Image (cartoon, rainbow, N blue to C red):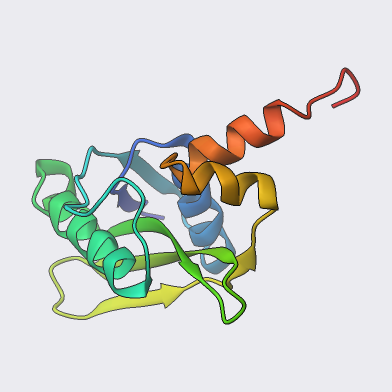
Length: 146
């Protein structure tokens, strides 16, 4: 059985693992999965649906333009964003874009939106990216039992 080649528009271990798990849920074919550096063209921490979507689409295009991406069966990009909810609280979500070979169709998905602890909101308001803010917030609460 031929392997499915997948190029992720990132070298981030969590994004590579998310792509791996996603494909493993829909196929039992072997995967050749790799990541490439792909600039989003948006701010380091996108705010709002449209900026986050633009970032995911740009990462997808950048991945497809690499030698590995041009040969891949699928390219996939993840972009995390934040926005205010109806109550003025910061919430986070992700946009995922995937493309089969050089097909014009790009599948776009928005994840569920979830609220953030006030401590992470505070760090975001200080200009820290969500991933770093999350790491910093939870690291400060780590215990020997974790």
